[in-house]
Length: 87
Image 1 (cartoon, helix red, strand yellow):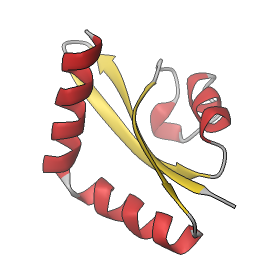
Image 2 (cartoon, rainbow, N blue to C red; image 1 turned 60 degrees about the horizontal axis):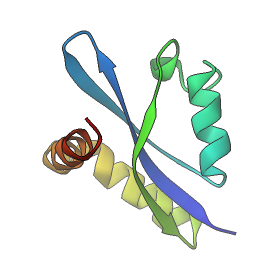
Image 3 (cartoon, rainbow, N blue to C red; image 1 turned 135 degrees about the vertical axis):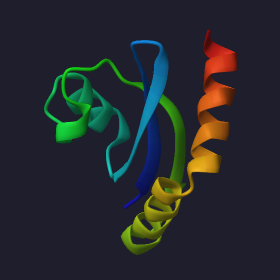
């Protein structure tokens, strides 16, 4: 089974915000976030997938998710790259 760490981006007023998570079914999870069935923080917003990385074990995926959640510099780099390429 594969596990994915992902970063979602949405625009709120004049700035972009991000959300980091992990899952086994990436596109179903994105759909849940966009239909307000995901995490409480993501409700009521339209999210776009900006980053994903595949892992073979849940424990490694959870460790990497934690690192990405805490590494604001890396999140900013990913957001800026996504914004530049998609807007």
